[in-house]
Length: 524
Image (cartoon, rainbow, N blue to C red):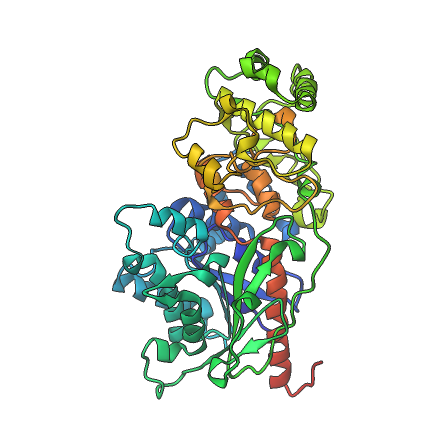
């Protein structure tokens, strides 16, 4: 391909979907993410730093970037040293809340027009916020006394995405959302079926004047099946045709998402399905990261932490624990006399890591350390729960469940008994699988780590931001801005960049074939 293809990322989050389109592989992969649209300040700061990084070729990344990652200089000093790249990164990051006002809509449209710069082909990517569609989100919403799904404006946010399509007519769009979308309804209508029809005929859905050019329809394509759909021709898709299981494509995480590729009807080309790969287990991407002990909520230091963990032996219920679990816990407590590592620095840990899985993807030899890798602090009783759960998981070789705890060790939450009776969220204390893809990293990880206990009982902790980012396949030099809670939220909401890269390859092939056809070539 001879020209750069502009990319616009809507509802960008921290940039997981865009990152796959940012990885340059020569002239056959010429995407340039020119605009990120996001409302969250912490995520936008992450986007701006990453956009700044992508202004340089990898070999020409300035040393000051790594100085900033290590905390040697602040953000303002980094950007002051590179004013042109900083200004460009700032121009590409637009902080607005889509759908909030006519002024915002005008600003978004002018920014997209500027980003396209008259290009004949360009790509729109993104996915509306998913809380209203997700299964867990619907359970939480329905538990609220005054929640009315018919008035939840989040159901309508995809219309903002649709308006961009109907105003600017991208050659290709990529839309991502949670699997819960398939079973979600709004005003007694299937959300997914409505979306498919709207995305197929944006002008009709938006009541645009179809006689005014341009006005297009879109064939809707799956990236995992060799199918495309033109709904007015009677080709009704199965909703599951659009479900992408990330673990089937090299992502070490059981993450299932709905992904739709829309191709404008003047481009008569279908994408080739993604090629499945061998599944990757969590251990392969986490084992090289520095070991850390968890923190203690009060008076934290290594000695106090060891003392607090070992107090589990003084509890009356200890004698009633199954002997094999007792042995595992006792063996682990012997290791705790000398923790492998203290909790680490919240920003930059001097200890480097080297991934055994796709090192060319994850590693940056100039980094010389580990970013965003500090363990959370936990209460003493939660330290015991994490230790106990990890030992049970290792001993039984099965998922840990809430009723595996001794009665005295169960959390004192009001809904624990209900959870035990009806088995809802019985895995709320869950140990990450070591020998299989991890469970889905979701935004709830920002609230607590109970659902993401590290498989090593000697560390007595939940996953760090960097470990969650590894399971999401973010490169190790991808730095997450904001406080730790905001960092976890960004990672949990993101599209795995490795999966995004493979989708970007599909889109690149579509546009390569289109250009060949326009040049009169017969490209197989």
